[in-house]
Length: 405
Image (cartoon, rainbow, N blue to C red):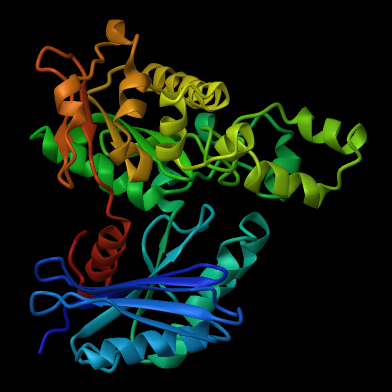
């Protein structure tokens, strides 16, 4: 029997998201989420999708750590005949946020790989430790099975040095690995490729600006299937206005808040990462709620929206200049896929760049990739639902089965 299933794990500091896929047809067999790990009451929601699907099952109980969480996931999968001991399971694919410059492709995890992921913890202190815990736990459950790390940063390692380097003293930058790495790479890779397919062209022939707009948000300039610039940098803080992050900001603001405001580095870290962005501007980081407030005449929400769109337009213009020729702009992730007013506002006034949105097409809700630009537009504007789990599964299976991704 050929093993064709891949379990995808996305381990956060207090959560584990998972999907089990059959790579013969990329179908999902089960999906689920364990959250509030380590708290008094944890929650596991599991949805089997085989045999026409079934009702989700939920458990609320104390789950002390990631090992216990994955054992609970294994129990739920086993109850559906999809257990981790199945000979049909080919590998476990792990989302790892930071791979630095070393990891440019999906990689089977061994001791040396694990040490390198650990070495990168200082530049990804909120993410890599949880990813490491997930890998170790999965190794303990299935030591005979390939554990494959798929890195958020990998897609962006094709950036030229002119885009990746900051104008910081070279010796200091190299010593502390300070450069632009970029994130959301699996999404940018998937969406740029799917956008080319939507246009009926090969990825190598298409230049795309990808706008991944969720609570975390990033933009990328993709030339012929390769990333040449991206908005996130050393960390996911740089770039677009996000749900709770500032995005681009004068670095001297940090010094000012420390010297004049008397704030500690930790306090500033929390401020710019968790208490700023849309939630800092208007008290909401849900775009649906912000739009509702705007419709009711809320000026604070309107200003937050305008700041969000202004930053977005700046990046569209900047990446248009970087690419020279743009064939398509693709909106993706929660806000990009669902917020028609954001898409409309982002390209409004950019007609001289060949950009336009058809109001009727833009208002359509769909889970399918689609064009929302009028036929006369020189640049296609697309909505392409992202699928990071499928991308991780596909890269994982390609590696362990020996085929090309």
